[in-house]
Length: 384
Length: 196
Image 1: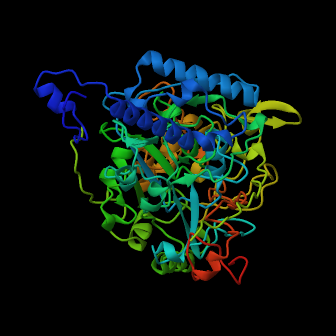
Image 2: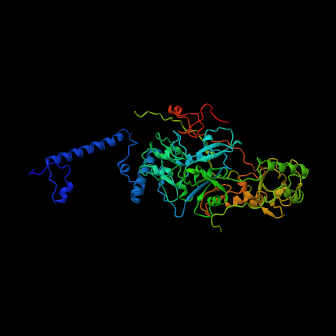
Image 3: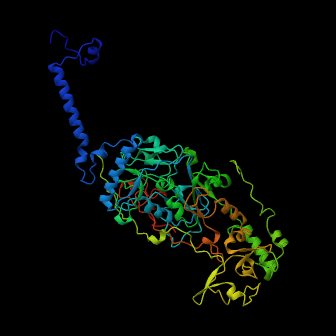
């Protein structure tokens, strides 16, 4: 001990300053040993819940040590993909076509939904489930179709559980809601582990291997777009979609969050999302907003669009719009015109202007003067 | 306070017939030139119409083509759209005739605003690809969704509604404690099973 004052708690910096090697004393040996033992005990306690997992749920060492998505090299990603392929094949007897697809250059995805055309048939909901390998029990769906009374946009008055023999019901309209892929996403801000983030093409993704299941994002989302796997997802083998990617529809585990990702395993390869293609009325539109000739760009330029809950400042990439219809069978003015024609034209009623129909003048007189003129509309972008 | 155990209701998803999820045009449009099955044989229109003359103005019940249900509003005469001389072509109002493949030009004469939307891609169904001018992209024509004789969309039988957590019945007593029964999209409607 050589007369050294033995009251210092930690002598590292002092030893370095005076150029001395820290001396191994009995006391410091015991202190270090106790700390090491404590750390091991803490690690064991932290890993204890893993012991309760069954064989299938037990993460392999490779999965346990897997890095964050953004930190993985391409080799490490390939390792992770192969690990997932093996796991999926063991569980579903199908070797999946699994890959990690990066965003395309110069692409920002935008979705538009025509509320005048949606009939509430729920095909999009079930096409999405079939495409994206959601759990069938408990049931997980990304799209909610809300039946709304005409004359309001207050979703609190909506109903998910409409059960008419046929749709649409004349006194309602239908508003499907899914992830709005916000440009200012609250779900990303609240994630404590950065397991969810916005990609360059505007899609907010989840790394299912990084999510800790705290559900902060579910609480933060004003569009009720996030779904949590409260129980182990059940997906019958024959219903697995083997076309999958890391950030989208690969099978999920219990305890992780998931949500709509604009079918990025399809859309990043140029295809349409499943919900767009199944829509029997063409109410759903999808495309690249950076392309001025895309369908969504045309909609943003020429239609009256709105976003849900604009006031919360999330800047959604999901737009709703209505068509202006003329003539409208619900429009009393249009009905009055038709009635008058029927009375005045007698037997000629119904024939188009021409050889044996009413004169063009008669038809023109029955219509507002400018009904054939193109509607004035704001032009916001450059047009060819 | 110790965490309360909540059971997760394992309601299996309702079965959906896979035929309801087939992607493609809603109906098969007429070919150009149109073919019709007559006595089991595929025939062109003019095989009959060059032989039998039919009235150009009549709205009387058809003696042939009785499968056609005509519910096109004011437009209830064959020759408003079909060319009176050549039934394998369609007629525009200025007398010009167009082949069946150009049917949208005919529809556009009355449905101008919808035609304008369709040309821009803001009306109608686009399949294949979102990439403008892609070979894979296919924009359906008017008559691949609408029956020209009864263009109004038929009613659909809706697919099963959600039984998901947060949208269906929740197996917790906290739901009742927190004003269950308020009309909220996050909760099922209590008291009335469904609202018709």
